[in-house]
Amino acid sequence: MEQEEVLQSLFKNRTGILATMHKKEEVISPILEKELGIKTVVPKGFNSDKYGTFTGDVDRIGGQFEAARRKAEGALALYNESLAIASEGTFGPHPHIPFIPFNREVVLLIDKENDIEISGMAATTETDFKHKRVKNFTDAYEFALSAGFPETGIVVKVSEHSKDPNEMIKGITTKENLEKAVLYALEESADNEIFLETDMRALYNPKRMKNIEAATRDLVKNITSLCPSCQWPGFKITDRTKGLPCKWCKKPTQLTLSYHYNCSKCGYSEEEKYPEGIKEADPGNCQYCNP
Image: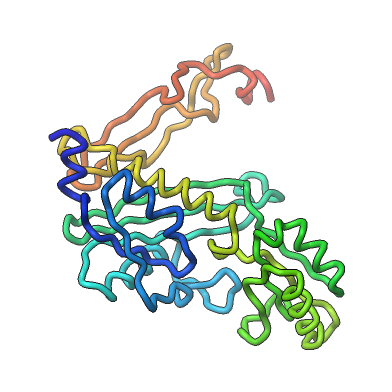
């Protein structure tokens, strides 16, 4: 079967439950509808916050993929459907450059009817992940503007470690509400200092929403990659091998030598050498020629 026939037989005109309460459908739904023919539905009454919050008032159970899976399963439990989509984001320091903030988004599709689980991922340093302690509204407003306010929402906490919902105000997008929240938190503060952070929920964070869109496109790319052996979707990169040889000394570098693809259904695997289209690395990337 051709790729289009396979995908149409699996997904076209099916209903996919999109596990969100933060308007992620604005970037996820159009892509899934256009590329796969999936008609998404956002479940009424679905509370994704119970699976964890960025503000720490609800701890996330498990890792990023497990959290996305739990969301998808929870959404499916509300409907008599077999297809669900969920996403989960993480924020923190860049794994190799600690002083740079880093956002990784995962979008997961679960198809119970065909026993399929496929994910897409996108990572970026283009994020408004920021926080600061302040003692007055002037400093708070200055911080907010530096973080992309009002397009990016702000969270005000009585202290950095506040977990009580009464000690935090989320989703602030106007100067007036920011001032009210800051004055309230200062009154509740024990040391006349409060904690501000960017609201990382998708509907209050345009840069995060853009990265969720990128992860959705990666999901579609992985789905539309069919296994050469069994023609099942999801034939994707599962590992990479470093060691592209240096053009001068021929010793291995940290650059990619090959990608390893794997099919989760039949187990077929394949290695693609020189995926970047070059067989030798520039000496500038060699730890021996350019230490």
